[in-house]
Image 1 (spheres, rainbow, N blue to C red):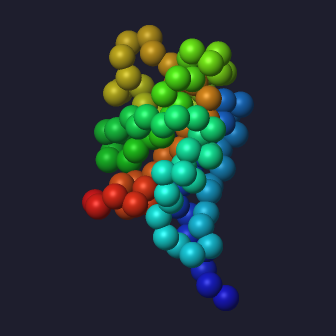
Image 2: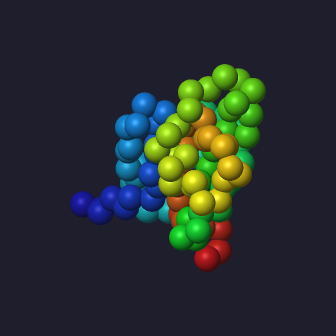
Length: 99
C-alpha cells in the first residue's frame, strides 16, 4: 500500500481546515489548486515561505470573509485587508515549483 502525502491545507470561510492529499505524492497542478479555491488564482507569499492561494476577484464576487486565512497572512496583508473565500496553503514544491 502506497503512503499518502499531505500536500496542502484548505481553509474554508467557516473556519474548517482540511488537509488535502494526493495519492501519488506529486505536486498539485494549477488546475487542481484552482478547483480547491473555486476561483481565478492569486498567491500571497507568507513570511514562513509557504504560499497561500486565494480568489483574485473574491471581494468583487461577494465571497465570505475567511478570518482563519486572514489571521495567517496578517503580517503580509495591507492594514484592514481581509481574505475572502477558500484559501489553499502549499509550499513551492507542493505547487510544482522549484524550492
